[in-house]
Length: 204
Image (cartoon, rainbow, N blue to C red; front, top):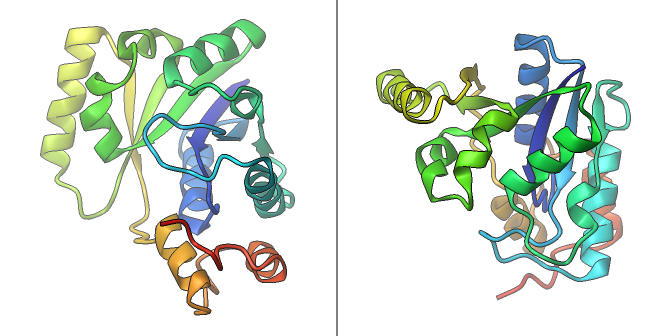
């Protein structure tokens, strides 16, 4: 099967994540898209408590439960150590050798990928789907892709992504202030955040 991989903290998952997964699914004829929450990301400050992790997982499950080709994969929540893309993709290929993996990332990440831990190991393990927003300069994007393909034999395709300027940080801030997050997250996730009073005590 052709499997798309969407990693992140998903704190919380929002419509931008879901749209990206849906566009990748349709544009590249994927069989499934796996949303993989990260327990302990190396690049972000996150709430690492078990309670916070359970909330993030539950919101992902609520957001994806009605989409047959979306799955929540908890591999990166099984360790308290930092999870790195190269090691995750290596393990996924070992566990599921029958699958072909498509790793979905944003434009900024594509330009910074040489700063990632053991980044060279990522390229043979998957095809990268680089999401390009509608307002991005396609020429600079293509130059970066050409460079990575020539230098590292990377397999990279452009994923034309919708321009949705929403971030999990904004959602948390609005929830903290008691402002509406309607249309920014699925209704079930909005209800869950309200029910459990999430982000009312936002971290400093």
